[in-house]
Amino acid sequence: MGDGERPQAAKTTYREAMREALRDALRADDRVFLMGEDVGRYGGGFGVSLGLLEEFGPARVRDTPLSESAFVGAGIGAALAGLRPIVEIMTVNFSLLALDQILNNAATLLHMSGGQLAVPLVIRMTTGAGRQLGAQHSHSLEGWYAHIPGIRVLAPATLEDARHMLAPALAAPDPVLIFEHGGLYNVSGELLPATAPVDLDHAAVRRPGTDISLITYGGSLPKTLAAADELAAAGISAEVIDLRTLRPYDARTVAASVARTHRAVVVDEAWRTGSFAAEVSARIAEESFYELDAPVERVCSAEVPMPYARQMEEAALPQTPDIVAAAHRAVD
Image (cartoon, rainbow, N blue to C red):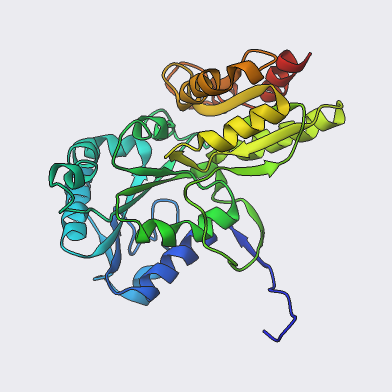
């Protein structure tokens, strides 16, 4: 590219952006390898690793048995031995089979060893509903993991974050969990080359506004941005905050937004009870109570196992009209 020329945007999808991030990581560092169920010949349960086995070979792209506890444990061991493993778990529901490894080993070893045993492990998994995959493949449990000290929890919602969050995650000294919403894989758009490292510590203001803060992450971001468009047509200026990183939680960006708008709606695809939305709402109440002109609203999934039937699944999930209605309750 010559002097003065602007970098060219390329058409891509969220899935392809994740694949290019993996490809870059494998090319950049011989210590990096990918392993998980069907990540090799099949190309990944959601097609993210398609073609990587042919490019990098079976030593760098490893198919594993159907045992999440075993291969997450192997990833922890590899990280302790100096490698940089990327472990793919097909869905967040299946990660519960490896919860002992994640909570009792990956998250605690640095602390329990007095700083001697770092676990630079990245675990990727698909989360969320909206694809008629039934209750055992469709829940949003990332808020559970955000409860655990010792790990970092990421939820890329944009093409830029899908493409550029992996490199700093691999460079982190602690375990990093990346939650990829299944409803985003086919999202397409223009992606510019990276001009600066992605910030893993701060939320992003995706749309500025003055009347209400809409706070969300992951697969709910497109619905929340659509709600902001509808609200704008009704004369309400909504600021949209993409949390991006659930742990550590960026309280400062949220508090600054609430200080500007004095109202908040938290959108979370998880169940309302004990959700990450509950944590965000509590933190707003603790840190920004006197800035609020209305109670904090929450828009979450219905408290049921995720239905399979399309119309029931759609009814159970937060949708754009639900976000709009919550914003009107806060503003009107």
